[in-house]
Length: 271
Ligand code: IP8
Image (cartoon, rainbow, N blue to C red; front, top):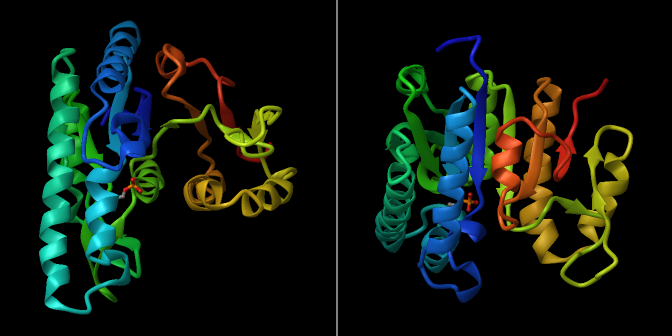
């Protein structure tokens, strides 16, 4: 890899690229097409390396829940669930890669369950030699949340939110961008409170206050956003800053990829 070329790890949230609210394994074609174009536009203007990780939406979460994969292997049905859930994620990944290719991005599917191993849901093995080679040839690896073998529980779920900081650390990324269905982290639930204010920066000075907000906001935040935040905080300890931005508002992702900061919530390293 070229150490002088900026490397960005981008997470495309599952709720943005799928019709998550309908609970059906369907791609949100409009969002996906627009995001692929924004990524392509940014890449044309600026020479950076990119790794994409996308979330699952109903393609992963619905079958994973049906077969109780987050509980590990307890019966034979779960191995069937492993196969079905992975295949469903492949179908989503296929469409993401194709959308990127239509915009002349050399995207290549990168299957986490073919290379990674978990231990109690945490990645303990995920070689990146091939990924590094792809990046140095200006290919964009497109990985995703998947079901993986787990040393403790048999199988388990690898969330894209867990894979992103792992890759950022291993590949020594310069930036981490989480493109989500909300513009960042708010001081109260924006879906319930129209006066909710976007928190522009999170660092060690306001983190305890933000954790309090997180735990009082119900499943949306304690599940999705709080977990995401915890993963991103691990990165600040390694000196890597990350940002959560809107993937719904057109143009925000393109501007962020081009280097604009402060369009969402920045999770900052300590000064
Ligand atoms: O949507 C979950 O990935 P995420 C992966 O990034 C599965 O948390 C298979 C449910």
